[in-house]
Length: 579
Image (cartoon, rainbow, N blue to C red; front, side, top):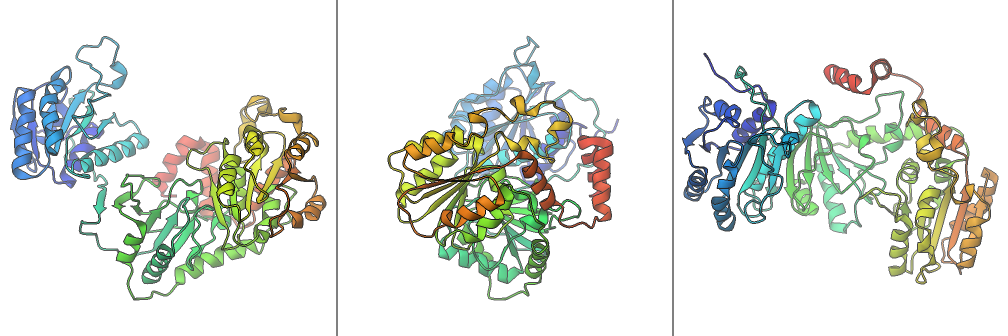
């Protein structure tokens, strides 16, 4: 009988990545739970396998091999207590910083605690035995496959990260008897590069930078990114809170929001910097991603991560920049697309989006804008702000709590400049106690959009109303906080020493707008409460997302497939069609 690789995909992924990362030495101990792994690697001439019955001795053998060769060595054992015998040698490896990879095979995690023979809990390891422990589950769908690839890469890279040391992989098996896979499917290797490493060559391809939420930029970093873009014909796509104001910024959110076209930009190589972002969808799945971050983490938002550069951002961009200048055709093309949509923005109903369109260009130079999550973040992203305005949002944990408090905290340490906040009513009432803080100065301006509930749950894009009745009862928390009372907030902030403004129509808003954006610090902090209806919020978003009326063939196919097959099946079909 001919024997090849197991058909267990998680085992295949691990084997493929061991080969990609050039880990060839394995010390294997006998057992039934690691048959699919050992039975696969033993027929592959790439691997150099050694047998040892006693797992304690096997692990010490791996320590000796790793010390002698200065290369990682893998271990493989079965279930039950076999892995416990690795602890003495893994402790030795931990304190001597030896790259030993302990692969412990196991049954499904669901069997833990169910009195199933030979199943023990390996979820927690002693802190001084391994640098990292991951679990490679059975692969049942694309999400499992991606998750296994990320975790296996992460574990293997940790063997030599910030000094060498042992790492643990818990590998699930279903005891498959099929060893008929003749060739391993390619598995994405992820590399990590630090300052002392040899960097890969930058490919000549369509390149873009995406900046997630980002703190204030240094002049050095801005110059480095601009020079990089000039050298590679690249552009910079931004989250609303990216705070990049260089010459290669593309304001693309409005164009990418259009639903009747294929509006997501295609990128061959994406340089991903910054932190959490809710706006990454402006870019269609890039072919490859290089992540630049000092944390060195394998953050794979687009699921095409190929390399992580663990270093300051300015160092990366300065290294890959040169004196050559590539024509800015890509930049011109992207800007032209968005500008075309901007010229055709319809007359929107009275809504947060309409207010953002009126206020965005009027914010005073040098001020700071704090946005609440979801509606405020989205609404303001479609319109251009003055370059000198910094923007922040609590996107890290992405909760409605604390948006006002964050703005208040910033305002009290920089009392010389204006701070604006835009929040919805649920977020406001959640955090309203922050307005009673005695440190608040007159440099605070708050836009409160009060539609009496969580409007997000009523929008056409959510489709909650199609399968849940009475959304406002619980999901969108209607009926609280005075139900759009015209007096509740007014009395509260009046007593706290705020100047109170309000609007319920476009005409009202236009009358108070100029006062709200007064460029100088006034005698009191301000709060502008605007009362809107959820129907208008919904229509405004729909109208803004459907400015471009032409529908491409691909867009028709994608929409039709989703309507007929549903979300899960449509994703699979679109993947097959490369839609």
